[in-house]
Amino acid sequence: DMQEAALAALEQGRKEEALALLERSIPLYPGFPGAYSAKAELLKQMGRNEESIQAFDQSLQLDLAQTDTWFNKADALDNLGRVEEAALCYLKSIDLGPGDSRVWCDLGHVLGKLQAKAEALACYEHAVRLKPDNLTAWFNKAGAESNAGCYEEAIHSFERFLALNPGP
Image (cartoon, rainbow, N blue to C red; front, side, top):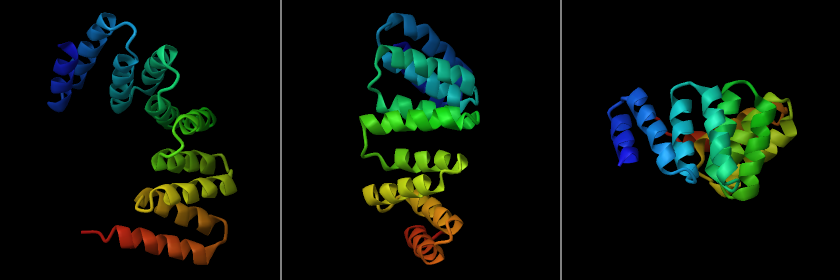
């Protein structure tokens, strides 16, 4: 199976070979959105974000209800500095699966870039409610609270981050 061969090539660090195998497998599974999503994710890992967005779109044309595909497309858009589009994709991912802490955290990140500070902080607060051990959410929440002048809250959030991440 070409997809298994692509995964094996990827595990061995042969990304170009894995990509070629994924591209050859797509016509074999024309209605399978996962083939396009796998290609898109690999392209994103390779730093080829524009191409990855096209592949994510091809996957979404086959099935709009792919929470992870919306999330990964948002990440690629954010990598390109297209933060408003990224925010919309994160929101779509949340519409489909509101319980994913990492999506809320990443939405907070792009909202912060858009200077929507209160909304970003609300996203981080929601992220830590969903997953109290989300290190990134606690760290980002501390930063957002500090930026908002809520220093006591920021100290608490940063202490929580440190307690969860004692270091080496």
